[in-house]
Picture 1: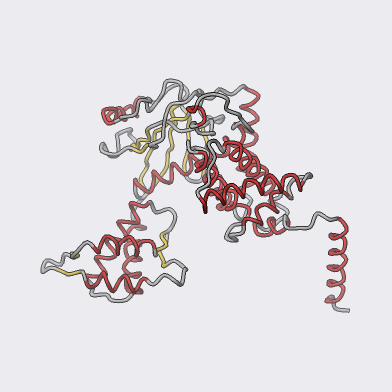
Picture 2: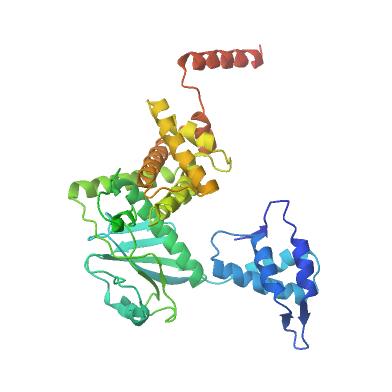
Length: 416
């Protein structure tokens, strides 16, 4: 796990560090202090210029930053390079910590839990408990007195879920556990979510998330013994409210398992599995939103992260996604419509009362694109090559001409 300056050459950390140096002092006891309120603004600016490894939680990154800054001041450092060395020293200390066993306890809006009872991933194990929460984790009831929502944090129809993992730091571990949980939830959501739904009912329905598999209200962290890691902390979604639990037929459950195993199997062979995995997590979190305009923004960003990673070109997304369909011109128009709405919402603040159709359309394209990239995993070297394939012409005549030209090039450069 590393730390570095961000690659944006317009960022000048030395400018901020010079100002931090001016408002800092070291006492006789060696303690570092800062004068004035400028420190708060300077911290926020400098922190943004640092690239922390993605496994660091915000809490841990802040600790590393604070300790590194104090060490830099105490050592009479003046340069950005020296400050970065202080940060790296703090990361080295962090990396030497021995990982501990933790269990995140939460729940999911499915009567029997995930279609697979126990799911082993590289980052831990996710286990559904349809028979009820194991007694040793009932220590989480300690948090009940602080629960303020009108919806229970563990509804009777929800299935308790355990996420077992190892981590050097509890805060980092919780973020990692929730990421793995959302990855699994994202795969199943792509299979069990409705393809389309029209609300003719009340506003409350329109404000409900599209995802059918949503997490329960409280996420509590425990030691392996079941003891609470910290009695003062639990995690929750401020937009949480109880919803009807999902019940799958045996046939639908088996279908969901097949889809899950297909995704996991293909990802295990994909060069850019980490990008696709991130996209799935971004997708499911987007469809947790109760504000559908926010869903449109975040879901489009998830689609873009898979179909045009690092390219910042929405036209490429339209062209590549429409290429996946035989009726390319029709789907190009659907994609243009979604892109147009998304852009107007971002740049002009334009919004309609219920953009749910736009959300379902993005979900459809995301699922189609994901399946394409995973089915073709053995035919392309990675996302860049497979996305480039989707930039191809759909004219047989034009493709034939390109093939002839490539044959001529091969013949031209082949030694006699």
